[in-house]
Amino acid sequence: MRDRPSILVAMRPPLFDQLFAEDQQTRLRALGNVTMQPQAGNLKEAQLIELISGQEIVITSWGTPPFSAGVLAAADRLKLIVHSAGSIKLMLLPPVFSDGRRVTHVAYSMSIPVAETTLALILLCLRQFHKIDRAFKEAGWSAARDLMVGAELAGNRVGVIGAGYTGRAVIKRLLALEAEVWLCDPYVSADSAASMGVRKVPLETLMRRCPIVTLQAPATAETYRMIGAEQFGWLRDGAVFINTSRAHLIDEAALLAELRTERISAALDVFDQEPLPDDSPFRELDNLIITPHIAAVTRQSYKRQGQISVDEVAGYLGEGKLRYEVTRDMLDTMA
Image (cartoon, rainbow, N blue to C red; front, side, top):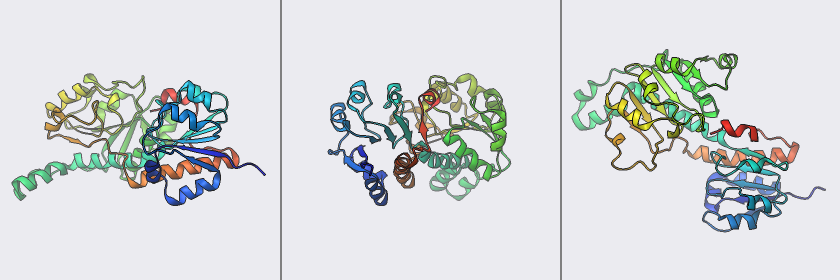
């Protein structure tokens, strides 16, 4: 009989309870001998080194220290890392992928709420419900009705920049609402785009010809400040720009200058400085919707992270299969 594998949960227990429903916790314990991080706060590197020795599988999340050379040296039996959070890049450095170790993550879990948030922000901008709500409350019925003529999403052309998990989830929802979708992603072929029901175009074409543009690309060296003053200038008058990805991708000063002209409108969930300062000029703009980096935050998304984590452990232990495996070659183009 095969010995039960050792599984380390390297995250603070309150976070584990938030992400892993009771039935998923039971499933996990049925799969192996589970060691829980003992303290409520984030682990220190020395504590992770002590805990990881002898463990075959480790489940990480927000607050887990980076896997330094010291951590890897102590991880003498480690074969699988399951990252139950967003980006792995700062925590799981390239050496993690050596010596036969495998890595998987739960990024797909967050693509659904981010896509829904993106869609909601597009609809709000098209119909100006944020302005109507404010006018109705502050100035009454007539003032609100003066703002009521909006635009529909159906039949409108939407440009999606980036077709990772979130970009594809956005595309799926836009097509369901009968929008025409154009895509800019250098890693997606024209044929693959066509199979998704979208048209692949260069960035300039997308920015110039799509009245709605949503940014879903990953934050990489290649995408740093990919949209600045020139690119914002390509947007047509009355265009809507959405960023639920990362502030890393845009020149905030250039967007602020464009918004101040009132030529376009926008919605932002991410900012260079977070929390957004109380005196940020973005707070003063009527043609901008701002949310505090919460696009991915839903009860369902949290629990889905736990379920995917356990599913991946089960798949690995069963037939060695991982649905969301991350390889070393993927790091350069991942968020």
